[in-house]
Image (cartoon, rainbow, N blue to C red; front, side, top):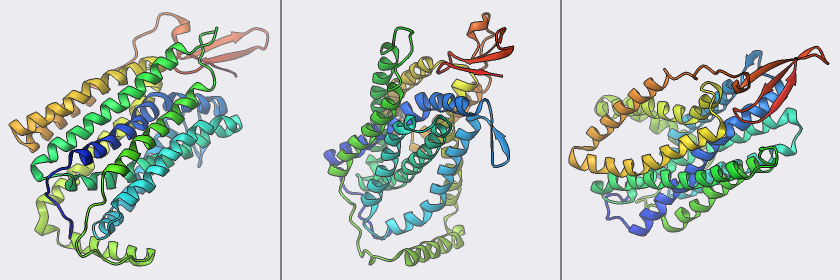
Length: 382
């Protein structure tokens, strides 16, 4: 990073402030992206469209539409990130961009709660748009959040600081998810259903959690100093500078073969990790047939197992090397994800246990379709 002040002793208060950002934004990744929103989105999509809807000339299911939202958000950030990164290295704007993108992400997460205000045919569309914007905010903020790490301490402290932030994230996301699980389990009416306000509350509280703890980051993490900072440029000039620097960097790739190989590998494995994180929830609901409560409980266990493991990998890196610890974690991750592909729902013995139940209605001479225990109750006629 040209002109940046690096490799200075860490400030404990700043490190805690840095880690609290992970604590806050993990609520979006757990309660929203993985645990609750996939089921709510699938329910609203089914209620509005049935099993499939024609979008841009293609019949798409709810999980396919969900995947599109994730992909578009990631693609837009991937296109913009290199240019923003070049400018951020030459201007003291890392914290500024982190704020703006956090406001976008957390604000869009809170806005998910407003879906019930729209007609049923538009509720899933509102969620699609807000989830897309929230993902752009999350991934875009992640670019600048990660760019702050080299400024948080010396080279020898990087593993410990990074893993501390991961541990904070697992604990923070887990604490709020536990609260949401208790609410979904115990706040029910006489028929055993959750009140209509509960799921919107989960969305709004997740956004508020993200934004609230991000305020600690904004308060305690200073903008990194940049020596010989360049003057402020307009949008066109900034874009030209960014692309010229990128072109120059790529033209000299032979001088940095190891770095480019790592960047390519990182692109592949981080995209794989993010894809699994973003799609695991709707995979559990749509494919494995998990109930919302079971899905939340599973994620909750993962959160509290992963938190100490993040600290454990710091010890492993100290005992071996950072590369060895990374290699071990990636190999283990690939094995586990590959094994997960072999999962299939157990054969059900009772008609009422199926997610999609077809019952002949003698009065109307139609089939009633019940989309039930997976997430929310819904009846359709065909």
